[in-house]
Length: 120
Image 1 (cartoon, rainbow, N blue to C red):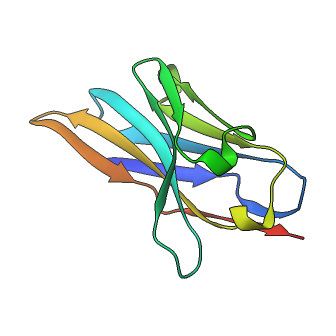
Image 2: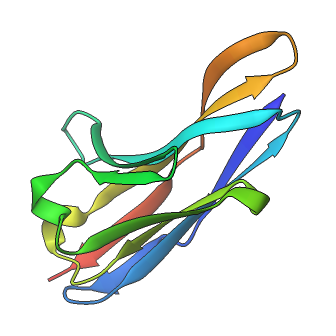
Image 3: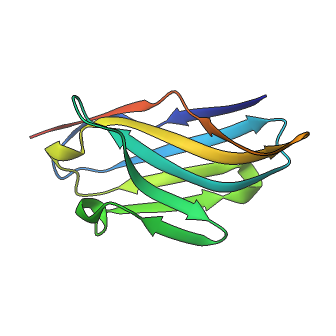
């Protein structure tokens, strides 16, 4: 069993910063991709950023100059540094990890989500 626990969300004023963390634990042999999705109220979940094989990818054009993804492989943890936050960044942020466990090549696991609210 694998668990992903997120932290770091909250309420922030526009222009402020937040740093999200997501730690994976459990019966982990290795982790391939780790990253973040977000979902705003009434909208579909969208991919924000991915960390894979030493490469990081910011998928959303609207955040490319403001968000940074990083990873601590030794701690199975992925981070999302969010700067210059805007009201449109409001939503629930979910981390994911593509994990190899004993008996399985790879499965995708999800965190429970952490709420980010940006007030204008």
